[in-house]
Length: 441
Image (cartoon, rainbow, N blue to C red; front, top):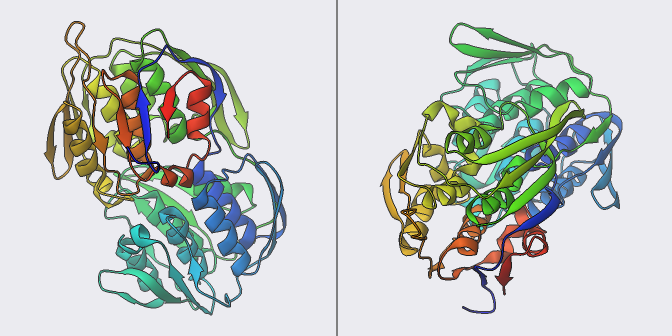
């Protein structure tokens, strides 16, 4: 391994109580809505990863006053709208950030140019640009709807937009644009996706209607909405909490509790799936914080069984499939994950990278366009072999997932480009070491 790599190896059991970093989805939205609002928004528990910091910098570029008051504590003073940025807005690796910001910016009569790192510049933006174009926004960009991209907004009209596929990012971009569209906006989603934008719009004083109708979920944002600054408490990110919880499930003798984890019903697909697999997981101290349900979640080492994960569960756990694949590697039998084609257009092609990494560690995998099948290695006392150096293509979830695998495998597992972990979980290595994990590098 080179000095730029991290390596995880088997040690003793993992024990302890930790708090997951603030939820990334809610952190992005808190900053953006705070910048769009009039007055002051005070945020506690903000995720201070690279992606969210890029969104904070972007909000400052659009005219908001952004101030960090302490660890996780931020103050946003909005002016009720965006002003044209003086320079290119660099969103780094933040796919959620750039798509939501483009939606918000489309509502104003101005031009803004967006770019990002190599990974983000390779990710298509067409799914967001299509409805924004129908509302009246225009743009100039690279082939395939890729960054750098210059967006011209203003003069937006009402649309009733049915999402072609489940996507909270597209839904949120349309709703944010609809704040300043003549006639407001309606979004119809065939399958419910994470609803943080709807909840937070309500928290900022907007009137928003959500109803089940026919085969879809209708979100209606009437025209003339005025957002007011508020207080936001960001709960622990379930996508980040998944790593120490799964590490405890696959490492003999382990028991780990994650405090203050978000339990939004549209974000608990992984907990449901792990429960189906026989995981020993308990949920205690359920409470409300900032309009969201949170709880303390404890995971103990478990004998897991392979399952078939229904495709309709994908929207509630799309970011957790890489770590689920690791849990599946230590299970008995096959785990089949269907309807996960969205994983191919994340920070990387996560289906391909997880398949390659698991195969290099001696795990049987079968890969299809929208399906990943993992053939669990647990047979008697047989363990996952490990022993590979995994190429992550700069994807933080691929890196963290394979490091968790290395904690319980027979041989160490290394990952390259671990610096990218800071995009979503800047304290990951320190947290895991505090629980007893052996991660070197």
